[in-house]
Image 1 (tube, rainbow, N blue to C red):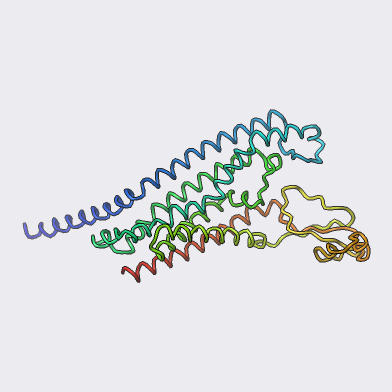
Image 2: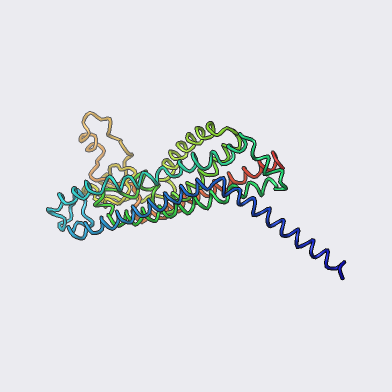
Length: 338
């Protein structure tokens, strides 16, 4: 009877020890990243509360002065005589709004710089990773534990701030604020984009740190990569969806302010679209247009309805790139330490 009991007791002890070791690894990762965790959570709480308060104040101002939907220069008869109130609104709330927008625009770079780049490079530079890898912790499990907590915190912080910014942006109204969805900083701050691009920069910073093994150098290179990726997304963004061409055969273009104009050109009497800038270098532009029989214009644009499809497409690209970079990180760790 004792013979049958001893193996079960030994097996239970082994399972308990294994659980303890797994708990020990997670506890170690938490101890190493608790400053980061508290910092990101503080940013989420302070930023989220600030955006919620700002949104409520802006919404109240719009309701009190009846300027919702009114731009600084508006053809809407309802907005006649309200331009001063619109400018006062922008003066009162514009700077704080732009501060929240700037925070989300820079968030991916900040995550890559201060979370991703030091994540592995600090341990590789000091050699402390050897302690974890010699405590019967496999390299892939060590890597998973190192990545999981920062990824979860990054997702939570970026998503929370993006929701707060969206509430603030909608409360103020893009026309009244003059902050349209297609601006470079505005697009990056809205919806899923800051979440996806923050995760991408997290793993890019981690990969750079893994390859460089020097924290400061990894941060510098990550900063440069972040700038390149930001510009690349801006250049690719207009072409993620086919734009809409709107023709104005007789008069100048009258598009909503929320439409993202990509380019425009002249339209002939026979409704032939002339190339963009065909008369831009002519000494007499009007004569050049008359010679081409141009009587109207056309605009290539993304309407406001394209905002969310464009945002999800860009976010999908960022997440696919993040997945590819993560696979590369695992392969390098496995080859180097496995």
